[in-house]
Length: 105
Image (cartoon, rainbow, N blue to C red):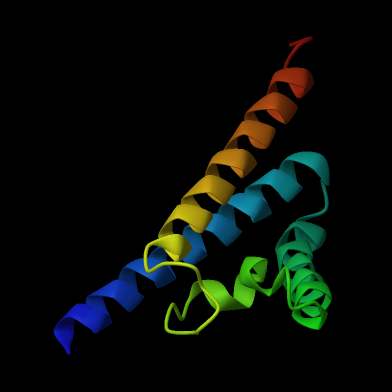
């Protein structure tokens, strides 16, 4: 019912926030705006293709982060924890890259 719809809405928000942060990270490294737009999609696709072939690492596939009803996800809060952890890692990487780039300014 409404609880599932709210859960999927929050997961979709986290998913979009994570991949927009990845796009921000790419734009800090690559000055081309078209690359900054397309590289996150390529990362998503390539990571899913590699992880989909292995049964062990399938739980880390980005395609599984929107639908927590699959049988191989360890627990119900896993998609939230996984996406928040990835956002933290991406934000730390972005901060490090920006520190290096702005060091001489």
